[in-house]
Image (cartoon, rainbow, N blue to C red):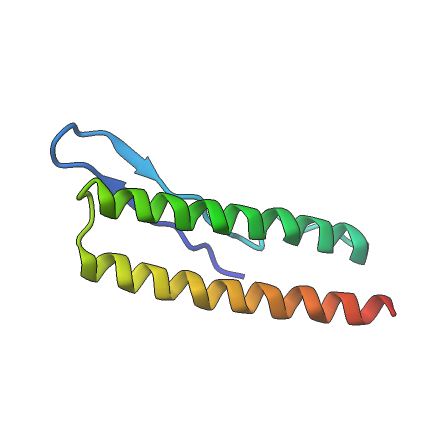
Length: 94
């Protein structure tokens, strides 16, 4: 899996806003299917948290509407891929 990272910098207050990201690297070494599924559920939660930070960034005018739409579409793709992966893992346990 690849890393998906996006860091937002505020022009006004020079603070960094780090969005969460899903990475398969963190899940490496989870050899039992149930453990992997459990990790994926946490990843899905982080993905939802990332969507929330993305909305906050748009509302705070850190990113514009176009950037928001591009990133949100990207997160939707990742969510679909993650859900398919979870489904494939679950089918292996049956």
